[in-house]
Amino acid sequence: MRLRHPAGSVVHLAYCTNVHPAEDLAGIHEQLTGVAARVRALTGAGRLGLGLWLSRRAARALRDDPAELARLRARLDEQGLEVVTLNGFPYGGFHDEVVKLRVYRPDWAEPERLAYTLDLAEILTALLPDDVTEGSISTLPLAWRTGWTPAKAAAVNANLAVLARGLRALAERTGKTIRVGFEPEPGCIVETTPQAVALLGGADLDYLGVCLDACHLAVGLEEAADAAALGLPVVKLQVSSAVEAPPGGQQALAAYVEERYLHQTRCAAGYTDDLPEALAGELPTDLPWRTHFHMPLHAAPPAPLTTTSSYLEDLLRLLVTPASPHGDLAAPLTRHLEVETYTWSVLPGPVDIAEGIAAELDWTRRRLAALGLKEI
Figure 1 (cartoon, one colour):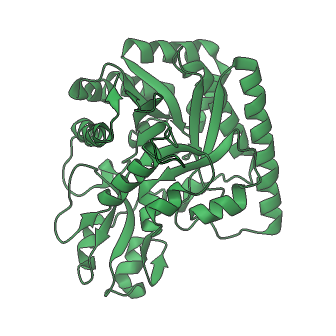
Figure 2 (tube, one colour):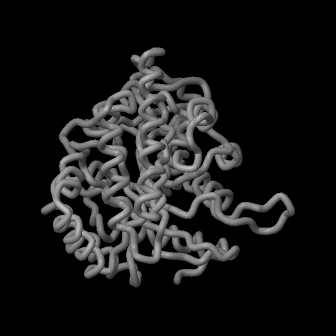
């Protein structure tokens, strides 16, 4: 979906397809003609934006076969779908029975991560709509925090330099600018926006920046205003909410314990890498907890639990309709918005994924309309 910003620029809204389990091209085509087509019909969108997730296997197949890449672009066009952003965080196996810490491998110290991301950038230049010259890719926040050494930091910095040079050369060759955003996440070496500034501030900011995930920032207890003013390019905003438990109500979170994904949990006095440890007594219960479990944007969980949707709304306002130094309306700090609730398959109770995604997109559209953005 495209929306016209009051300052004149176009803002792109998409939903992220990492919610779907396909790892090969056949499965991706099935997504486009199946759930994505249904979401488009439910939303009434003229063109539905996708934040496309391509596994390493799918990306390699597209890189190696220009005919397959052309076929994918044609399928997007025929289904009324468009791609301006890719989710390059999961390398593969994102819907395996157990993912947990495996989602952070390979990390940015490993050559496989660099090669995968450069392949995604090349692919995105071919998938961009004809009238769009800028694309974005989100990626992991360098690495999980354990095992971080000076040698690993040096390897990461070397890979980021190669990445930036590759993106610059790609822009010169194709006329399409692809930017990569590193996504701060609790427990990682880039956990907060200040850490992003410290570790990425010396990078080539023409092509590298951050992807801000509202769920992650809320779990990190970051003020929305601080995150919006971090000073690095915001390549993409992931529109997401965390689940929050009030003091004394934390046992209600037991319904969200599951084996596939990591659910980092934080309160003002502590942190655990996963929800079971918090529920086992590692966090005090006299303070509210926030848990890294992406919740549907439009639906409240059963009481006493709530979500961080008000935090998300603040972040949307600050990033999409910032005030200029003169007090008038400035251009948006990011023009790529991606609804990223990938947890539908592990939510308690039955769900209709297409209906849920459509409702989330409608929730987001209404809030953007309230900020003065109009669909085009």
